[in-house]
Length: 309
Length: 309
Image 1 (spheres, each protein chain N blue to C red):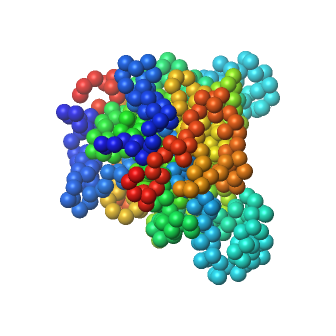
Image 2 (spheres, chains in turn red, orange; image 1 turned 120 degrees about the vertical axis):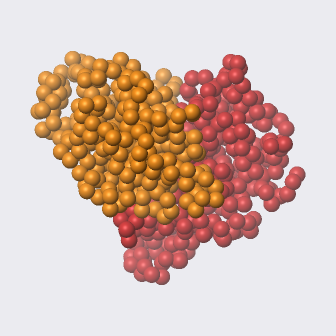
Image 3 (cartoon, each protein chain N blue to C red; image 1 turned 60 degrees about the horizontal axis):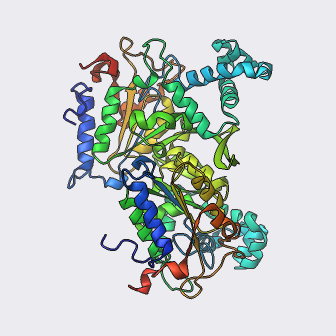
């Protein structure tokens, strides 16, 4: 790695991250952290890749839903599903989480986890973002890819801790981020073990098991990772408790919010956004010692398609 | 490692394991498995350490329960808890899983996961096994410690997948087995995030979240690890579905049952045992191509306190 973090502009944010990582990984430093404790957790949507104009997985679910709908006329009897069938996203949004849950269950229930991952992988290899006309997997933030690599080069184990579906992320995260399935924590539906054609499989059931968002994120971190992280990176109030849990442990800790303030190269949104609202986090970051990264000022190059800057 | 697997006797079992590991980790071998897919899962009780005369964690829970009981006279109103307070394990057993659940909730509910782990660590450092008069952490099976190391030396990532409580195992598994918390899958109670004295913590709630046993083991493997293992090792019918899930995948797979047939050095039990019953597994192992390891014949030295053999 000749130029670690060269997609980050020189400045306070980059310098603070670099100093923290060096301090926690240099023996004889007063802030030294043993290798086994070096855990860094990252939110996914809006932290590692684009989450506007809607969560990528929501686009994937809606696309799958529309492909499947002609075979499921009975869906029209449920108002939320009818709205989605008609492509009326405003009406669907009226049903809130209930509507989203109905879509998730319609698309996933009865499929095996392997089938769901194969569908996700096929979609992610072909669907394109409406504004950037790029594959979604090419809309990951280059500074964050470098940060993940920089941390791993210093002995940190990097985890994704996302409100997104665990099967969806696991389908592509290893190839995209270098993060293996066992280092992905996410929301998930109940699965049941079954044997189909002599093969043991997990079948998705039509009910949620765990929602990994807000105060659910520390729960997910503890359940899957079993250790308080040293570094937590997010971009919305859904990450607030994860940053709080991380940074209220003893010893050196680092909490980071990515602030979307670059409408030109990406998007500008915070307190009023439907996706990725950042409100309480902006109010309390300074008092809590959390670093707020400005995409506009602190990131030199956001996307791979921008070319070298 | 000059003598890998030297606590195993030379013979078919050791040779089959060695051949499998070499075949799956040698490039250009037809059975080569990429490093990222090299996942090995191990049951804990009866597979990595002693589970007689009762599960070690059950002994820990009962000990903690008796220490706490004087401060909880209200427990006497619940018949199962009253039986435990009177030390009447036969009466407690009459209440089956309900009785066990009542003990678990009485001991754990309201504590933070950090408090529960600190208690487990203190107990494991002092409690002694009634027959062997050794610390429980000194009653791990030496051949299995060597197998874990042998697998890791060949690029396998080793996970524990146990019906035991996840916090209990995580308290000592890293030091004892070299397995970090994030590679421990186990049963767990619901936790809720809270801030106590300015510190984010997870508080144990009085209800089970997930029982990682039998058909629950493939569910746990998929949820935590997200990939079908290559190798699965167990010792009871509670591991049957985990071995089935593992070995019905494509490509090379290895399922292993440890058979407790050595009453002299450890214990002899299978089809009729309360703890670690192995019945269906014995019937079907051969037809399914699973290796049955005889502790008596295949293990040269079982415990560290036996000295070098």
